[in-house]
Picture 1 (cartoon, rainbow, N blue to C red):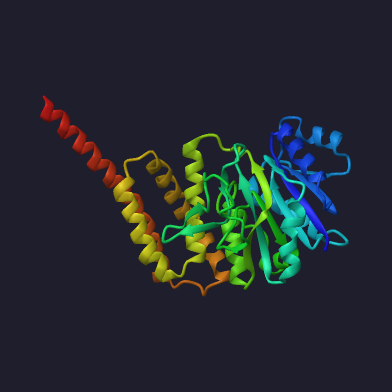
Picture 2 (picture 1 turned 30 degrees about the horizontal axis):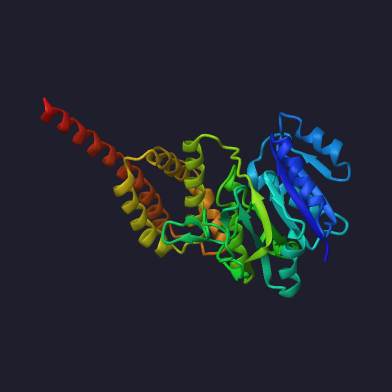
Length: 337
């Protein structure tokens, strides 16, 4: 079983070097290491080429984000004369233990229906960041199992999950040939891993978490502004829901859950991000609904209209929340006077 490691980089030369050092010190050596650089403006590419001459480097002309950037590397690996059986994706700010590659590849040899394997991710202080993941119903809020818990062995059993994080993710190349690569519509970030895991499960592949594959993730964000991060997060969440939920769940439990959240949190900072995400989703609705046709029959015209009206109702609910907040504040000021 041949294995390739694929690292996506952007303006983080020192972190990438530490990541690659840990990859090249594996007890089970990878057959191929590929770095795809998303148009870094620092010395990332130069540093990698100087210190790791045996590592292949591809440089994108512009920053394509996670999904499209990784797709460049995955396509290059698929086009090799002898493509790898397994490809392991790594964020540039990760460091892996010497046993990591052996551990993450083992499940694939044991079960041909395993399509993806996730890792145990720890923060630098040793607390857990990820021991598997799931999407909270009905709003599809991503939740990492074990998040910020002390690692005392409570998640040391291999387990099947709905999804696992793309920060350190092993994929069966034959499965990717069947289900396709990442959906670039999620670029620059968020929910592309959940979408891929959903498609794998839709094709009867299993998603498992392997606790012996241990990664330290420094989680330096390439999107520093919290509001911007929330915008992309919520846009990705909405795209995921509209692509993968059945119609009745979209206009039923999901719509009810979203409205309930707006009523409770429509005054928060996240409201600005949600408004942007709703508008962006409405603008791209035809393309999103076309993408879902890979799994479901095309929606009827009246069903499409209901989804568009639902998104408009979310935006209006945010406006109503802001109006009520402003009115309540004004009345409080008048009562003081």
